[in-house]
Amino acid sequence: MTISLCMIVKNEEDVIERCLSSAKDVIDEIIIVDTGSTDSTKSIAQKYTDKVYDFKWCDDFSKARNFSFSKATMDYCMWLDADDIIDKEQIEKIKELKKNNSDADVYMVKYATGFDENDNVTFLYYRERIVRRCELAVWNGRVHEAIAPFGKIEYTDIVIKHRKNCDVYSDRNLKIYEDMERKGERFSPREHYYYGRELFYHKEYERAINQFEKLTVNKDGWIENVVDSFKMIAFCYKNLGDRRKCIESLFEGNSVDTPRADICCHIGEYFLENDRLEQAVFWFKNALNCQRNDSACGFVEVDFFDYIPYLQLCVCLDRMGRTKEAYYYNKKAGEIKGNSDAVKFNNRYFQSKLKEG
Image 1 (tube, rainbow, N blue to C red):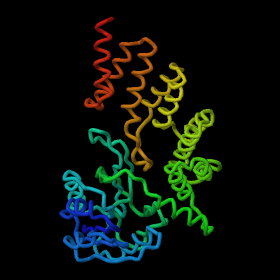
Image 2 (cartoon, helix red, strand yellow):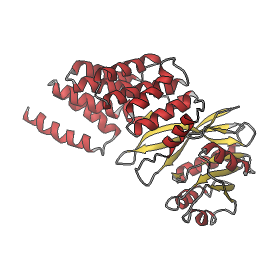
Image 3 (cartoon, rainbow, N blue to C red):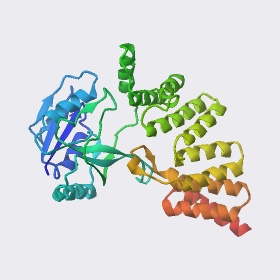
Image 4 (tube, one colour):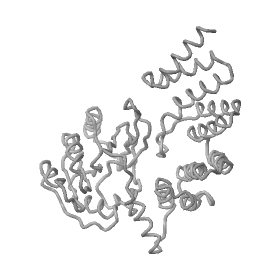
């Protein structure tokens, strides 16, 4: 089993060497497609490969990625962004995958994109990361592009980490969607969903609601996107100051499919903010009962399955005067994240309070 690493890049001099040096020992070929760099990105890439190509940018990520795949010659194509990293443990897992010579067409790999202050993964989801080089391995979508999984699909425990160097959120993707809208291009349910997210990040809440409702009104599209659209609509209404529509959207989101831990926690937070503590406790306990299913391929916000509901139960129960129960849940949160500042603060608080009692 051989792998071509296929990347599209532009002005990535700060991160591309970190990425390539982390991946070079496990791949068999490096394909770099540059979409218009004006810094030293290309010269850095040329230290790792002589297969560096220019591609005239046309506001279409899929066209650039398909061009990169067209230059590959190995059995499989693997994609990375320039600010991705494969750590040593994951390199070994990929080496094992190559040795096993599995006959899968698509290998799904976890993509970790969120981390807490102690570098614990807080946000991840599966992506089609290593795909057989064939006519079915085609990228679609001008932005937030994806390959529809095909043939035999295998889920792995390999994790790729996305490490952005800055927190500035670009308006590039939003402008592409707005251009598509101006030109009257037909949007897929997935594109409505991601257009809505781009609008939300840019605080265009009413326009975002309009895009998300393209999925929620008729329950159109992939179920994970539909459920998340209800949650995003709730966030929009919260930011617009309409708390009634916020909680209604959260309840609707939980009625579409099996209840989700994150939505349960947001419902619990609503009741906690309104000092309705019994109801808040009910929903935080519901979150603890939700089953985590990474292979459903939706976004997984890890802390909502244990750490957050434990901490919130601690807060609720302490306010209700049930100190020992509250302390118990703080200890449960500590079992998940013992170095958490919140857990440490609570421990000091409870030790003092219980001593006084």
